[in-house]
Image (tube, rainbow, N blue to C red):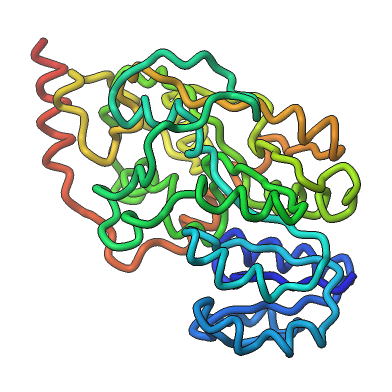
Length: 326
């Protein structure tokens, strides 16, 4: 299969590209050219900014792709810069579960949306939920602006949950691993009861391949992509500790003293749990066992620490002292 992937060199796109290459597909990665991992040397690279995609339209058509995967359509402008220049072929868009109303409630500190969320669950009433969190792109970012454009072309939309794994720029395990590296024996946490669906990056790649391989079933459909079972935030932290081989106690501290980077362990009013059974039944997709994938991810992050790790544990010490005094 000849596959064009838009943005396939960093985290999720990188893993999808590697999975396509591993099974023998002919892959062309379209990206700006400022990041080109050595392991992707076996595929073709087309360097262009998304805003200038139209200038490369002739080259794209000449490739005669059987499928196009868009990993980085963050805004309406991102989609409109690309879609008019793509041939009539199967399309896969990576979206996000942040389109659901539950995310809006979560950010507002409110509850009220039943979980797990199926693909028919209500979506957000408001737009641009990250405008205050990500200045610049956050003012225009909204997958609800992007999804309809791809669905209108018969594309498959994959709504991704919280993705972890090798090369994760957000370093979702770092809230525990920075304390592991520092040898901390007690780690302050909140109630830790929240349920947030996660998924290993390799399983996202396998979901994309499943959508490509079943075009009749995937076309024009929306699929949640996440683990079929979910740990609480506290249990997730415990799994990371175990995978790191580090013995430390998770100490429940007053909510107002939970360190900022441990906020995910606080009590919340709205769980963010999605139902991915549609992808399992319609596409035949199955995520891996987290007992196997968490250790793989943890090992990579321990071997590839951030360049400037946070060494300030004063907030931890205050929270732990308060917990012991109460």
